[in-house]
Length: 306
Image (tube, rainbow, N blue to C red; front, side, top):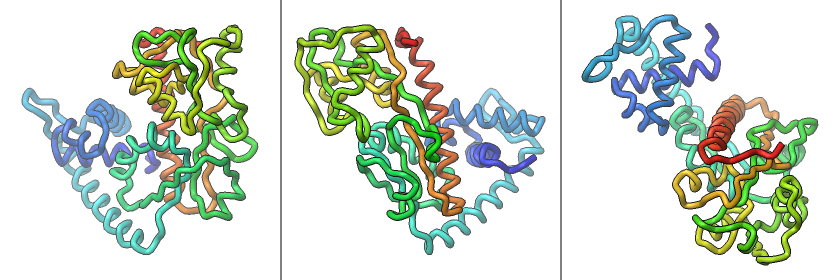
């Protein structure tokens, strides 16, 4: 059985869950949901072919086999953490470049989970707008970059997440009459109102003459204005999903269009194992984000335009 990233992550979840004998407390330490911890333990038990916890009426207890595994994990992770801390003191943090909206609305709420899994990896996050390529990563000392843009696999970009577009506003807002809110440029080189134009064309709707529009320097500002009742923003579903689920924003129309842009990941080729660890974690989070996005389509009664 190879110690790949998936198995190591499951073993880390097991070590914390075994220490607490409680999935809820383990989830709090790892900044995960109890369901995610339970799923990791279930998958680990399947891979090992035997149970690790006894589910008792008043809590959890380790099986005899799990006691040996727990002691091994404690020793291994303890030594790894100490080694990472020693080595990390002499290594600069990784530089991760991404747009302000992506950083604030999606990435930052998830970063604690990465730090819990990789406490020895420091990260310097840089928020910036302009596009970057592999040459820019090398010349500017950037280790990883995430951009919302049309995906170009031939340039070494990896698909992090696909995005969907739908108009969103405060509860009760109708997209036909409200002001249209948008950011200045959806991605580097995008035409003004590119996302609204793509959605209208995909829905077979004529360009709207009424309502006017309001422009913001960030999508995050446009979505906040929509939440405050100033109009309807062309929402990026992954970015506004939490607000939709809390009822702070509502779909102003049930038609959803796959976006012409996606979240793309570019990683430098320095051969640094920390870059690989962060890239693998980001790709896994991206896959989880896409699944949550797909699940929300039915729960919010949304229809994807082919």
